[in-house]
Image (tube, rainbow, N blue to C red):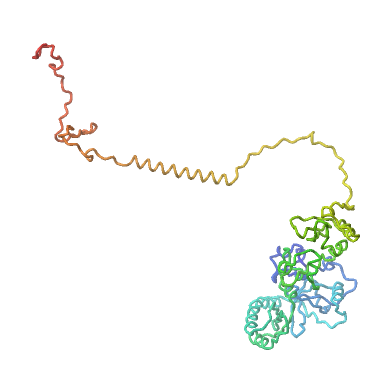
Length: 466
């Protein structure tokens, strides 16, 4: 919900929030905002009130001013008001009418007190001047911290706020004690050429002005709605059975969290049913000591001092019976004996009533849906890696085989030849080669057969007959 006092709110679109309108020009719009529901509903005040509440720097500071009739300023308007130290300031009207009367009563401001006046509504030039001085605040804050450090002052400049006309600048700082900043003011006035005002605030007020996000994920309570700071001590954490850990119990300001007081009353009311002195119980089995307490379940966890290996959750009513037994002079046998003292637990919960409906579990049965089992991603990755490795290995084998095929065979005349005297007769030329080497026997093609040799010795061709 966008607040009415937000600069991004434009008529009916204010309910959409600031993000839909492009965001606030000065930061978040949830810093001590006030919802003027009377003005939002268009209801006229039965008793007109001439004072209005004006917020500066997006609600970090609010003051009351007299609203004259000729200004006609209402909730959400930018107005020019009289500053306390002289000059003019620019702010937004956050409340008007009867709600201002109630707010002044809450902050203990008298209705007849002397207040500044609303001069007029702000025009475009006033807003442009305000944006210019707001943009300079960050650089001036860094420079101011450097000057304070150079003077060895035990202080921290937390925030800087310019007046609307740019003539005055207020420096908010935190310090443990009193600080002599007279020399610091002279440096600021010489370097920044403005009227300087120093205002000391606490650590919680500093967090409220700066803002931030807490451990819960929400904006800080002190920067959104909490205006009165109450003291918080470690007793609140002890009542709620929280570990006394300074880092977990501290907020953005370095102090104990304000939310420790929110549920403290509930815990105190619940602890009234628990015994005050029940940290130690004497039993025949040994001394039992209290470890922790569950307030809302009304359980107290005990263990033996000599053997802390097992915890015994015991109801608070059983503890009362054990204490009564010890006061009478009898000691319980053990913690198991105390657990056997079953108290009458009264519950305010109504008895469960069985619903009146027909059981159709055996009549109507839905078919079982068959689903394909999906392989795990790691199996897919493993298969992919195996397939990739197999492909690489196969490619390497193919490359080696192809290399063997393509390797030139050594020629026959390159091989070592056997001598002709050894009966080898020299090397024969390959049969598939058409060329002939010198010294080889000429090849006879289509030579006619010898008739004498074909007939043999029986034909009487000159041989002796046996």
